[in-house]
Image 1 (spheres, rainbow, N blue to C red):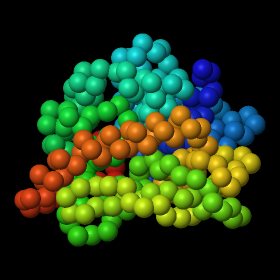
Image 2 (cartoon, helix red, strand yellow; image 1 turned 120 degrees about the vertical axis):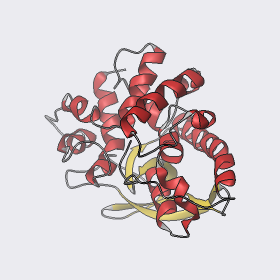
Image 3 (cartoon, rainbow, N blue to C red; image 1 turned 180 degrees about the vertical axis):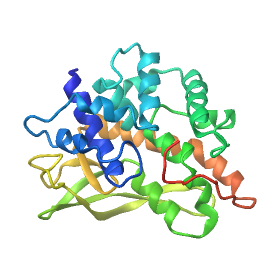
Length: 266
């Protein structure tokens, strides 16, 4: 696994939320250049940017440590966090969870007080856990406002099939996130447009109808093979099963509003 491939993969998934100002350093233009595979792109510059992602970096750092991988941006580690793979499945989840919550809790301070051992049953070394377990948005689902569900559905990595190509967008058929007042589920297949290029170019060259892709914050990040798509589906379903018991318990009582800015990472 080359160092370049892991850094390119990180850039593809991290670019969209960074461009929206939700995570990572301000103005990390290197992510867009590397994600597009442009000539002369400073792949090494991804390292500096990635360290400033206070959500993704601790997961990948710890996953690399516990898996015996020297490079935090090794492709296996990057994929393990964003979509799941053999490293995700093999890691000691309890040890990972205790160490991760300790690191995130120290950064979050008094803002996200729920980052305690009570979350251990939900922990996985994946972006899905960060979205559904660490972010405050699941705790706001009972507010009656549409924003929490929209953010959760946008922030998770969505797996779907391209059914139509437009000049700057691809229509992707996938399952959207639903909330019934007690649990989160993936609903029926639906067609949604997603951006397929940025100002610099496409992240997935020669995109075709029928391609299976990953979408993050309404941007097509990469083309998935069958194993990668299956792993993403598995870990998304796994996370929802682990998180739903907490949601059912929380929404039998009043909803509390976390004091942190919910769009910022821990």
